[in-house]
Length: 220
Image 1 (cartoon, one colour):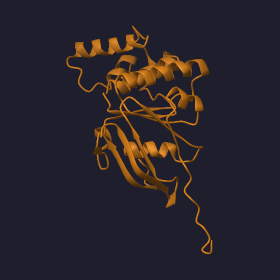
Image 2 (cartoon, one colour):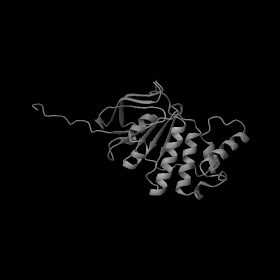
Image 3 (cartoon, one colour):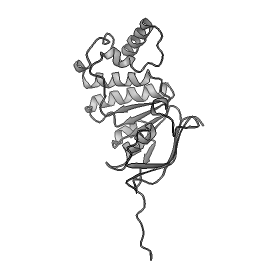
Image 4 (cartoon, helix red, strand yellow):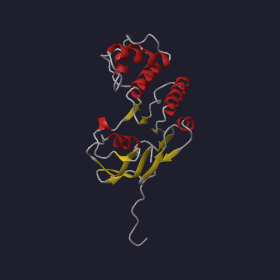
């Protein structure tokens, strides 16, 4: 099956389950929003998907991409792109070098420069390649972070509340840009959010994390 699949995924922190088992499929070009209150395990679920779950957590279940299990696959070989609430641009690199960092195979240096220039122009940042990231606005930084993810040619994208620090008008614009670009490329997207507007903009498919049932008394 193509797309991203979560199969009976369970996470526990120090042995305490965080949520009921999650089973869901995200087809290519669609977005599934994982929702729940703070501390419910949303970001930990993405860490599990990336293969970077902290040692105090334990996990059960499976994660499949295009029918192939990713369990045991090193993080760098999972072909998952991720955007966080913080853009995490490299401060010691230019805007162009930040974007080029994601290139899987850009060919010659001149070819790589052309790819980066075209990518920047496609999001309204023509001529920004030599800029210092520190000189960019929040929206410009968000667009650079998106390009860096997409030029790495991921097979799925994970979004960890990447719009949360943007003001409302900018949030709407960047949200539309991210979802449109992922849809154009046929990428399954798993979005972690607590914002109902994110869910609506993503297409309305929502998977609320549910607390595990509490133990019942023996005579109940």
